[in-house]
Image (cartoon, rainbow, N blue to C red):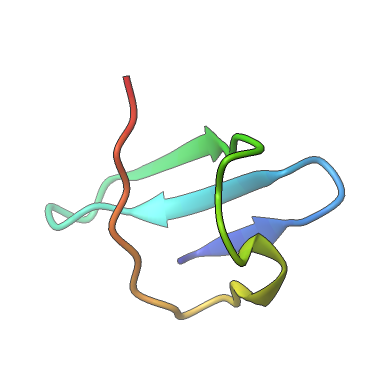
Length: 46
């Protein structure tokens, strides 16, 4: 996890190839309030 915006439910993730993406986190995400910069997460998006 490169950055977390809890108010807007956005996260910036760094992919294995070093590229970064900003993702909108849906309401179905569990424990979003516990996510911190530096955490390693598994994401599924479509």
